[in-house]
Image: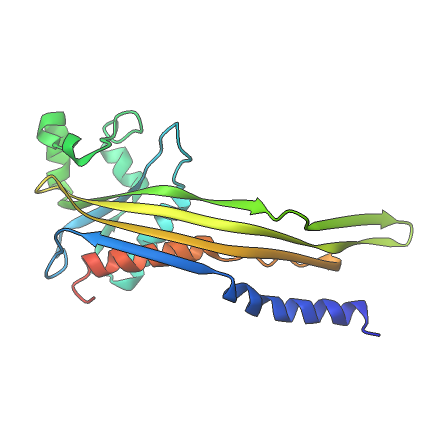
Length: 224
């Protein structure tokens, strides 16, 4: 008979391979005008949509995508989201931020905002909307007990993870929308327990970040 410790190691060694096979990503891109030689010395800022009637796009995801682009091409100047929001306060607060590109004209919004955009040499604004969620799989269970001789957990818990994000690219010079990118990632996470729970989480968040970052990098970088 296989010992509990041996069984636990066997399950833990096999599940990562199963997990990777359960993660799927779909990326769609629609561009209307692509930079022919990157963006040069201009800057791009990536902002999250944060409306009261939808789940907020997390600062963590925006930071992840921005860092992915910076690492992929150091010549692409990606502004820090918080820094940009502070510089342009209050025009990009959720209640004031333009929802459609038709609303975007810094000279019409405020002359001071137009000056700030010019000083930043900001070429593109990327709006990202979406979130990552999870849902427990019906029928999966895990229970833990504690007794005089010790305790432990037994069972097999599973849940699904979903990341759905869409990016809209605005050109600040032409005041137009020049592209859209969507990344939909799903995966199955597991937590087997034979005395000790072993959580193995599907990397849907990281996969969505990398997928979105790769597509934006191809758009902004002269080397892709």
